[in-house]
Image (cartoon, rainbow, N blue to C red; front, top):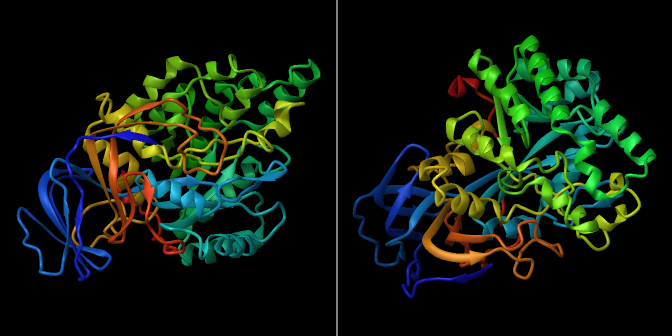
Length: 482
């Protein structure tokens, strides 16, 4: 990101030899509070919060006067080095976590996606190998389920006990990843019994398959027809059905990448009648709209994702859903593909365009500028949807997602006056375009810390490859969300 900032020397570090770091003079924002405070970090943990803390002689001191201090971001939905649609996503656990760190995210949860008929335990081992020695920030895994049988049911229990309590089923991608309603009920039953949480990709796979078939038969093959093959009604129907199945099973449900009013209405209705349904949305659905498919020729393929971008009229409804608590978090569904050599695999048919966009490095910055600065979200709500809520839902809290004594020293120091502009020229994503090209930013991270170590400074990565740790997560607790 190209940046311009005031001449102040905020966030300059006075070097010392000790293991203590003192952040002085900042304003701390958590999901529930805001206050002026000094923060003392010893090793990897926050050990003291106080109005005025005097540094030890050897401590490093960070001058945070005029800065805002937030918990490091938690992105609970990424896809790194994912085999998908005949190729592999461009960002691996090194480039993806570097982009995340520079953008203020200090923990992420990636999806393990086994092959149809394959072992989920073998898939998990493969994902551990992908991440080990590469990740620069801490990470966990969700487990996708593309089949269900007795062996998978047994292995689910093992996975939960090993610190992966969250699962995902696809109601879309018929013939590849999609599961049917009976399988969904079985998965919901296991998660309910053993302290797990099921998330769903809510699009009606039969509707999508029907629409794609007929669009191609009519010669409608360009990327501008992708949204026609993924209408909002298919998402709304699938959300309704998933919610009904979860009610029958007595289980909590989490809906990923909610994109439209049709599914948001289903979530609202369920929660208003007392059913526990949780959901996330993504920056692209808050800030981009389907006009991008109509005015860019084949370059519209850059924004082919599922669900697709929606009509602009629904964007403020999603912001309201965040503000009012019907949507708990903002993740990215980061799944990056290069335009040249990957997205253009679908020149003959939009159904062959690899689905996904790069976003993990942009999420926090976009939410600050277009949420906080535009007064759609308070600063505490910003902390909640970018860090605290996903940490709580997915078993990372209070180790992650907050600023408190005993928590990991995962912190983002924001300069509210610092300006920048998103561009492919300075992205950390390993791709040849930016999905948010030209978006102006006001308020940017000047310092990002992961477990007490500075990993990014003024959009430059200064951390260490492989320092990221795999985090085992606790089982889902519905009590805090009732």
